[in-house]
Image: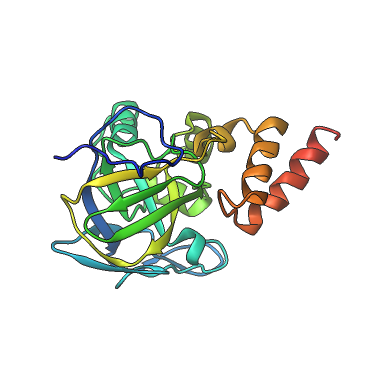
Length: 232
């Protein structure tokens, strides 16, 4: 495997690493679900061979609830093998690719600790941008069959990340992941999800205003809620 190859002159300052896609997962079948939609597309499973990636995600993949999932800012969901291994130990069972509803199971790179707005090149031509943490829901808890799963998943902070597709193409298991840009604000997906501060908010707001990153509208709503909570 080749080392990660940051773009010269940009904000990446970390050590050289190696990372790859372990599995590419898309919906296997829609399952009945007692939620408001009546079905869920959380049953993602690995597929063989290359899969086309467009602005709304993997070809052949769907989201049952478009109000809460999908769209360009949540085109793909990535989850790291290290986090899956943690849950395998906690729950005493295997955590195969797709069990978290993820599209990409990755190795050698932490999706949860990715900096908001950082970019990865996957394979020969796909480029993606880290956008936001995955917020666990009741459907996810039913999928996992674990009591208090939403609370446990939230408290652990091993949430993975949604990705925006910057450049389309094809990806498959075994593709290398190159971390090509990391914003200097330093706020990670997990940090913003588990312990957001006013300093984090200001750093993200400034990076967005400066054009270093492009925050989705939900961030600005969260900024307002955070300020109200802290009495600012």
